[in-house]
Length: 187
Image (cartoon, helix red, strand yellow):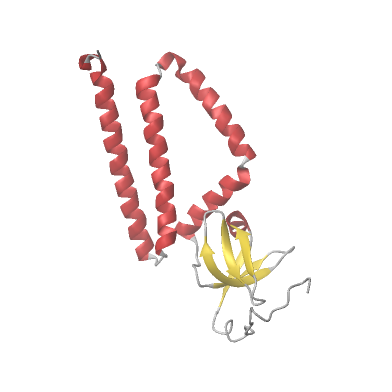
C-alpha cells in the first residue's frame, strides 16, 4: 500500500504546477480574446491561437509532471540532452511546417491585413493578388480575379512584400461563371 507521507511533496508540487499552468492558460486565453476583439479578428482565427495556447500548456504540464515524478536530477542532463537532440532533428526535418505555424501565430498578432482584404504579393517568380478568404495554421487562402482559389504558405507571406489594394472593383470585374456549363480541360 502506498504511504501518502512518502509522496506528499510530489503531490503538492504536482497540484501547484497544474494550478499555476491552468491559471496561466486562463490568463493567456483571456488576453488573446481581448486582443482579438480589439483588432477585430475573426472568431475562428482566435480559436486557432487558443488551440496553440492549450497545446503549449498541456506540453508544459506533462513535462513538469515527468520531471516531478519520474526523473532524478542525476539523470536529468542525460535525458534533457537526448530529448533536445531528438527535438532538434525533428524540428530541422520539419522546418517548413514549424515556420508556417510560427508565421500563422505571428500574423495573428502583427498582421496588417485580415480576412476580406484584397492583397498583392510581390513575388518575382509568381506574383499573386486576390482576396484573403481565410488564414489557416499553415497557409492563407486567396481568391483571385481569375476565380481561382490559391493557397499561399504563411512563412512566404512574411518573407515577401505585400500590398493592400482597395477591394471595391474586385467583384465588379468578376465574370459570372455557371459551374454547370463550365467545360473541363479534358472535354
